Length: 477
Image 1 (cartoon, rainbow, N blue to C red):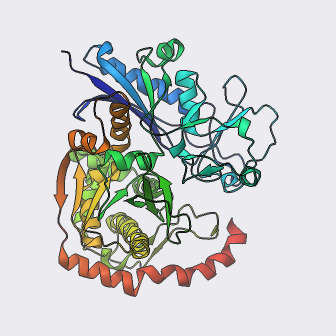
Image 2 (image 1 turned 90 degrees about the horizontal axis):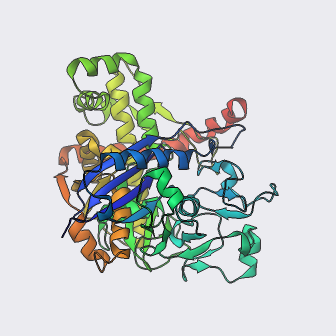
């Protein structure tokens, strides 16, 4: 019997990735295409230019298929995961009526506005890409977060007309809803010719990108939290009931039908800010890294490891993209003196991310009456030993990384494994496909320092800076 394979699609904010796995969760090959810079034609408007999500997926798919060493007929399914909290407006035939609206766009904080008569369907990025791949008007219910008329208890569209009126989207403009791990349709000949993936493959529903990442990271009910180091950085724990009135976290639909994902407050443009620091430090860093035969990231991590925990008092508040309800907030680096250089700035940003997530996670766990025992760190930032160790030290908990840190791609493939009958439940899929790479134990001396730094100073910074930033906002917004 020939070996079988699964395709996991991970469409993110910064790139489209297509990964081919075997049934044990090993990466066979992958394709990746960076997305173009966001289009921001007016204040508060943030869009993906042209048809960038689809165009980059085509390129990434062709790259993966060209690298694939096996037989195409041994690929048995495609799991599809794309960016959450976006809005896609389609014409009657399925083409874009306007560019895809990014999750960073302020229009998404408001109900849908009927200002384009060409719009026939209003959907998510998963609904749009599913339609491009299969021709069907099906979508996963678990990617509807934000301004949508969803009933999270029934996992279906609301039956209350007042809810539809509130969100201003007629039912006939919405796709059909399906649960994760089910087949949304089959890859059309047209989509096959464009992507290189075999025609007729089942395209499988997953969930919102964070929930798919949680599945691919092996997050299960219990006392473990996942920290997702992406463009948006939250912490998450698995839940088994809808808590719609939570004060310190969001209740999202999980990749496991009937289950939920509790998500703390997070950091907008989280790993984007790390990239910003790298670019800010300039060509000198890149040249020195090249001279040492290492990547720029590894070079900066090596420098950051030489900076003391606490960055000699340099502290960073991660508001490079403020929430819509506090638009006056800006990123802050405070505490400079003559000791500080580029390495301090870099480490301070990493520490600021970890401290912010710790505070959000603590608030969530206090409300849930949950005591954490472990962390899982996933996403591209988890490649950094320094960053993972900082999380272990800040939380005072063991922090593990998995062999596959692009967990959304693996989670997509796991949903495809369930839909195609490879595994009969999510527990088995996790046991077979998720593998721990290593575990970082906390440095208790560093933990004590971070605890004092956080409780006495860091968590109070914005209570002092908000007032002055409110005054500066009208001048420089």
